[in-house]
Image (cartoon, rainbow, N blue to C red; front, side):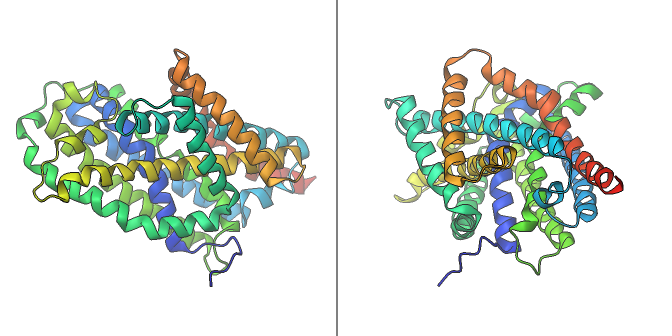
Length: 363
């Protein structure tokens, strides 16, 4: 029998973070990079990887100073600090949940049920996500531990069979982008890895024998694994479509699946199986944001009631997803928010939390 103590192993943590990293990055980054740095998108991926590793090292430093998870650490900070941080983090998670739910629903309708109502698909998606959120982190970790290789093996097969469609001419550089374009590209990659921030909340969920250093190393391996997949995926997409076409595609990785030619009756439908790559990875990232959005909202109000807050977050995510689909400029607003406010605040909050707790102690 499985225990139900809301504790997960480092192996489960590794697999959860791989899914969280892969979700949105493999869908949107190739298009962004092709439009910004073109053939040199590899440099931006590597630069974003450097930013991510530095950020992870910084988070490790903050964890070492806190000696516990962010929730426990902030319990000793001034009340206004807690409400400010939890309020912002909850709003950020809810906004991200709405964006991810919109992308997820769009992906389902585009590739599976084109004629179905957007609102109905969205409601069903969020209902399933809500059920997963109320089950806690342990139940989700078990599911993704089982699904890990069932998802990654089809991805590797897709990339392998796609190699025969790669045209070396598409790798010929036209003109080198400026340094600002490289910086923008690297920052774009880093934006997709701001999920690293949530490592500060994991010490309360990992098993007691997992120290802070081991937790950081585990997440680092997940990060490097995702970086490698991104580099290979970008190379295949660039070599298949060229930077001009790639820059205009909405979900190029999904489009790539329809171009893969395989032999054998079963393998001809492998594209349907591979669609699960993005379904499960997006679902993992959506669940992460819904779960912590509800947790942060509960901490902010200081009134217990996990299911109540999960319901509030789901309703807000639904309304935001409807806005993302039917309001012009909403997606652009989301990108700008994370570009100018979301990511910078995720960088500042750990140091701010450490500083405020120390100030409280000194008083």
